[in-house]
Length: 167
Image (cartoon, rainbow, N blue to C red; front, top):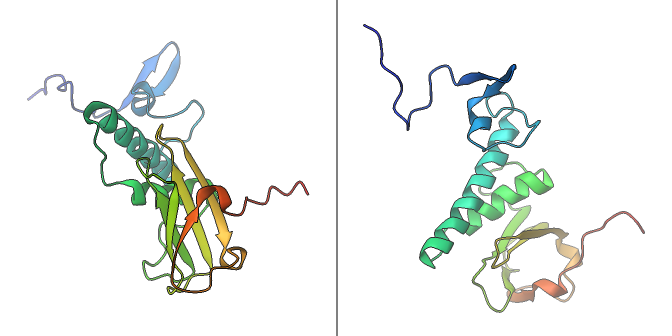
């Protein structure tokens, strides 16, 4: 029995096409990869970058379409840590050395809520702006002067700046 053409929503089984004398991967034809990027099937880190971009784009499009926010900002912050700072997604959820805190795009004022009673050595502070731009800072706990214990609200603008190595 010969199978008919794939439905428009199905990924072709060959998933590779010949175009202008070059092999073009299906996912590149769909616009989900940057030129020169390694295929997600080959590089697991590429899969994380692809998931990060897709989740960020989905959150932005959903907000533009509905005016509401998806509950994905903590996951975006974690994925941003992997993509921007080389953190591991495989880290144990009970890992006490790293704390991730996120400012959602709708948060006003732009404050991070940090519980200093919890043990952590480093803080990944992630700010997602109303236009869905993302900034982050990986900060050693000892750099957070004046915060010893209890819950603190820290202004993004007052967090230590990342060391650029140009000093």
